[in-house]
Amino acid sequence: MLIGKYILSLDQGTTSSRAVLFDAFGGIAGMGQQEFPQIYPQPGFVEHDAVQILNTTLFAMRQAVAQAGVTAADIAAISVTNQRETTVAWDAVTGIPVCNAIVWQCRRTAPECERLKAGGMEDYIRDTTGLIIDPYFSGTKMKWILDHVPAARELAKKDRLRFGTIDTWLVFSLTEGKTFVTDVTNASRTMLFDIRRLCWDETMLEELGIPRSALPRVCESGEIVGMCSPDLLGEEIPIAGIAGDQHAALFGQCCFQKGMAKNTYGTGCFVLMNTGDRPVKSKNGLITTIAWKVGGKVCYALEGSAFNAGSAIQWLRDELELIKTPQEADALAESVEDAGGVAFVPAFTGLGAPYWDMYARGALLGVTRGTKRAHLCRAVLESIALESCDLVRTMEKESGVSMAELRVEGAASSSRFLRQYQSDILGVKVRRPHCLETTALGSAMMAGLTVGVWDSMQELAGIWRENAVFTPEMEPRRREQDIARWHEAVKRSMGWAGQQ
Image 1: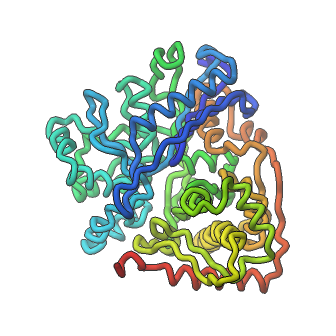
Image 2: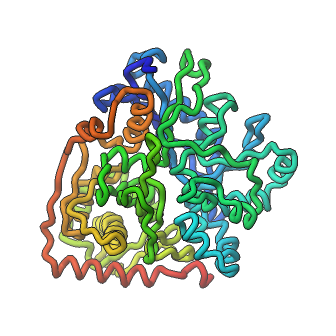
């Protein structure tokens, strides 16, 4: 079945679309990337133009192939990994979206989430889907579209409405409408999927009024689901791997053993721990999710999600204009001994685990006339490590496993200050891999296993190589002081939007 030696991984993220061409040793042969704008119609609303997402993905994939100097015949398979929960609705016949995509960060469905809670659905949703009730997830986004976009309602009556997360939208478009699928990882983020029975849940579909015909077939994370149109790269290429970005990153970090964990510092911050072949029910605000399904075997994970991490650094650069590059924030943070009493909570769009406060908002506390931009930069970087600490500590409590190390990646992991402070505040080793494109690599690994580029997960584990390791240097007393100050700042940020 192997037709080439490369895997083309399409990594569609929150702020840009990327494509990475990997060779059989996990090395990067070519790369492409293009950013796209964020759309904020009103406070708490976040949207993307789904057509722009497709066009930037096509640009990135062609750029990666051209940079590597290969042809379609050299590519064994295409994989897709994507920003999760972001929801697209389109016409099955024309392939045209009926509205902008609703992004995972969007808070517009808070009233619907309150309705579900008032209706006593919390226990059912956690037991069935592994999730908590929050606007983060896709199901209430679909209901909002049906309730507020007349074209969606009309298409649903004609059985022409299609809902999907970004993976579904891309695969549908790449195959010219021939393939309408999602994988188990993305399905498990919709609040509509039974993570034990591995099927759409009829009770949730009825509760939210979502027609079953509008939802895709659910496939494995490693499975040939269709063929990329020959018009795009010159000939057909099998699409053989699909996974949500955080699940792909866990796979790409080779966290194949129960108890292994990784943290991704992307737009948000996401910690996932492999819990093996059985789901672990959380009592402290974590999410139970499907890590992947490969070779017929399902692996589960515990996940803690913070909505804003790298986006806080972008805020320093783009909105406050305090820095020109993320590297400048790193240098400024290291230029001062501490944050000067300043604490920052990056709750721009609410707080995720373990707090789940959709009405929390960003808070900057402890500012004096002596506060400098270096203190603000340090406080922002510290906040990313501190919210990650909350996630890891909760995860250890839930699983009963103490982490000996944390594997990290994502754009903000390039910050030496952040990696060291993360190690300090957790009191464990922080290990960064040689290949930082772990999200793209993870989905490429899934596709490569499917088409025979690699034979086993054991072989894949040999690809992972360490680039840097950080060990804790902070005194325990200082660690506890920083954590206590952080928790006090979080308390003061909570419920802010609800007071308006």
